[in-house]
Length: 415
Image 1 (cartoon, helix red, strand yellow):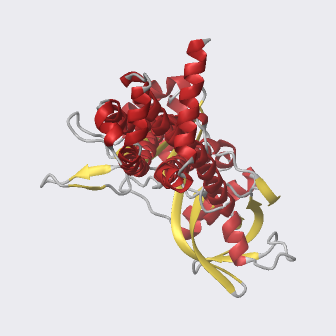
Image 2 (image 1 turned 180 degrees about the vertical axis):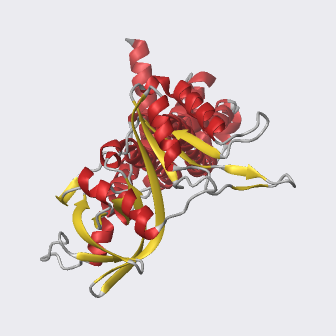
């Protein structure tokens, strides 16, 4: 019972020490509040941005492999961008010889000016096959995707990304379906569909338009290599079993090196990237970025901790006589030390809780603006509060130790 009374007396002393100087206590907590709020807000931005990008990538299909033009080495040893290294015939060979693929879609793209009535814009015009829609999980907001028959005939039809459709047809009362769009200077195509918005900025189809690859090759870009093969910008392949991505990439690499007659010591003239690999790389990079943002915000916590130590040292000087009286009445060094350490810890804990609330509100407001996505997770909150408490203990240790070492006789003489 006596032990409990002693502990209650100490807690009461801690409370009185903090509430006697309310403004000073608040100003002491202010640095911790700002630091914790900064950690919560910045790390939530990092996590939210990562989640948004990953969601955008996964929406395109986590089982996809993208083969793009690579690098070539000149006689001087300088690596330059290779041109015309991928062909439609490469895509057909991959589809025929690689077993772990459900579909293969060659893509040819060109940046063109699009004109519809009095509106115009520049966009990436992509010549694709009918498999492209399914492989990339593209959904139609209105109209339809072009058919296999239209693809085979090279019919002059176009499917618009949502942003392009809004730019070319700003009048919401008029449907783009059936309207005419000029692609560059040669082709006038009919709009047969508008894609649903996917959002994000990573390779977003919202700002692209899709046409049959056959139309692209016949009327817009008819580039061929020396052998007469039709050059494409990239090749997209969908895997049946994502767990066999490494073996699939190895098989595709071997096939393309053979088709491109590359010597054993020659570099690949193409790049292969799987979505799974891209997601893994992005997660690793974003985790590092999030930690960096947290470390930057933690500087404010460090400054707040120094403020706690300064205020506690001032508090010890102001309460020297009180310390002398307590020691004269039998208080031990341990009791004085614990009291002042509890005061510092309580200040940082209270500041941490308030900082979490402010940081969460700031993250919510940022998210509501629509410019950035934010995600506040339990690990961010626990980390911020834990660091705040640790700073309180660390920076409160010296003032508490200094108070416990005061000579009671000299303390009682203090004015």
